[in-house]
Length: 576
Image 1 (cartoon, rainbow, N blue to C red):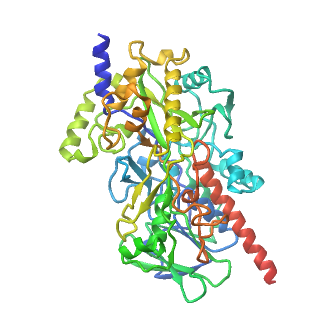
Image 2: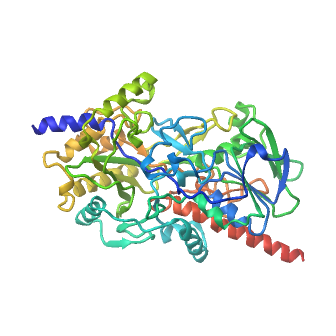
Image 3: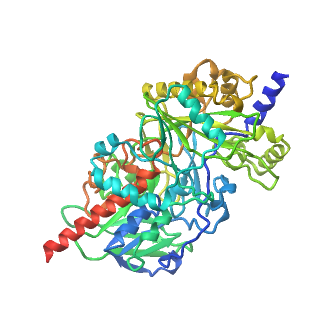
């Protein structure tokens, strides 16, 4: 009988793995300054041009607009008014949407891990699990940030988008299981990064509505900001007659394909700021002629600056998860609890009362269409195969979709890779390699993280959410047999946690690098070797901050906006 049950859950698990929620606030604020790029003039002039209205770009634009004219160019659309990104019940729907207007653009790394990048105003804060947690004090010091201004910048973000989550029984059991497993002390609810077990913040409010970085535009000066949607920047324009190339404009196209040019007004402090994310920012620099000269020439791109470190030192925090079927219904929850271990692995969890539902539902992250985790391997996703897989899922017992995931991601990581251009079209994904677990220390942290998850699963507080007849080795094998990536598998991953980590590695969408501080930009985020150009986003990170980076990316946008305005006002005072 027990064996039959295990086979039932094992078969169901092929279509059931980790989800990160996807929704946005139902309330669509009236932003008079947000326009479709088709309405933009052919030529325009601004003090600052920001490329990318994502997690960093929105707070940056809102801040700079207080004392300057700002153009924010976003290649995607608005997060407001689309039910697939406004309702918690629709989580995963956007990730399963492969259309050109989807807020999520799928890509597969050269490592064989299926991934996604944001294409929407608000960026990754519209696509993630909503967990809100600050970077550690050690991280802030190592980054060279002013601690007082960083703290104020976090507070500025938090008053708009951060909330204390409502804890349910399943998440509470994970928390108590972590404590029993020795991830101590119990730090309660806090935004701070403290070793031990804590309940973190969330960007979901009490009604279950997501608040994204786009909400931070409520603090913008309407007279100082223009936001253009569906505006794809093709290149940054440089003046090259002086001692150093100087950025002075951009070329972008609207949804109809019409070309527009935006230029900087005259002024020593006026700048172009790239905030296009860890894939988009190095890609745009290379498309504009700033990058490895040999690679640029191979694509017939005129070299403005030979900068071999653009696109280098790319990293993605490897994530590994174990699905635990539950004999009891569990609450729908995204990431709420985190165990910050002493050895550099972070333990988090998510659950769902009902991952299936009616045939009209799309099964969230479990949809055969989505990509990262599904019943149909990516190379076999024909319309006929998808329809058959969805029909099979509709016929499954709902108990198969009852349970949750306990996952671990590693700090850092230490392993790095690189990014290269595939084409000269900015909407095409570049080629990216992350080299998961290339460094032995990363693999060891994963092993210790999975070992801690095993202790949580077998803990007394978690016992009521686990079937007695399903051992941890069975759960590991069930996970390892699911098509979570395109990597070759070992025969029995539960015999070796090292093999389990390698076989079941996934992304948690915390990739970073490509324009790192000290390699491509200086500590003021100015691109070294050119003038009037900065990069401000996660591509500049040497390590992913905190357990989840979105809070710090939003903070950085505000932080650098304040610093840039201070520089501007100081120069104006000197001029007067």
